[in-house]
Length: 248
Image (cartoon, rainbow, N blue to C red; front, side, top):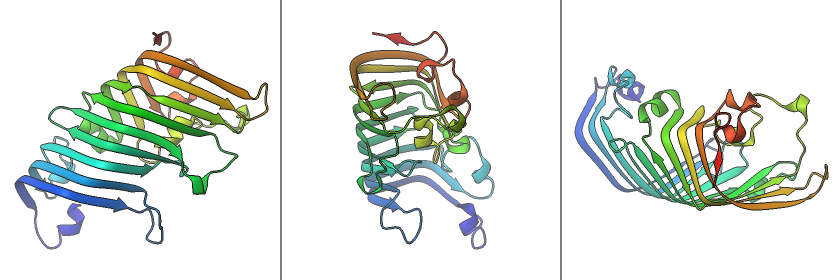
C-alpha cells in the first residue's frame, strides 16, 4: 500500500480511524461478472495507524495498525478451487482479544460451475469461534494459527463423484486444502472441538458400493494442521497428531 503514496507523500499517521456502514466487492479480473469476495455493513476501527516505508515491514503491526476491531455481515467468498463458495451471516474479529467469531456459515458448490466429475462439499454451521488467533503470522505469512477452534452444530455433506487413484495424488490432493490454498498457506490449532456435528458421505463413484453414510458426532482433536505438508502424511487421522482424536 505504501507504494501507492510514496511518490507523493512520506507517510500517513492516524491515531484512531473508524469506518462504518461500508460495503466491498472484490473481483479477480475486471471482466468478471461474479465477485470473488463481498462484505456488507462493514465496521472497521484502527488504532495507531501508520503507513510509510518502515511500517510496511513492521511485524509488530497488522494492516499498519496496533489494534484492529472489525465486523461485517453477509460475507461471501469463492474458495480456491473456483467451485465452492462460502456465505457468512456475521463476522467479528479483534486483534486485542485475539479472537474471531463467525456466525451462520454455509459452504456449497456454485451451481453454474458445478462439474459432475468433481467431489463436492455442502456444509452449514451455527457458529465458529477461533481463540487466541495469531493475527501477525496470518498477515505476514498467511498461516492461520489458533489455540482452539470451536465448531457448534456443524452439518457436512461430502459427495464423492470421482475415485482418487494413487498415481494422481499430489501434495495438494486434499479437497480441504484445495479449498483454502488460494488464500491461506496453512491452518493450525492446538485444539479443535466439534459440538453436535453431523456428517453425511455420498458415494457416487460406483466403486465398491454406491450409497450413503450418515452419522452424528462430537469430536475433540489436538495438534490439528492443514497445510502443504500435512496433506502428504498418512499417519494423521482428521489431520491431527497420531493417537489424538477423541470421539464423544
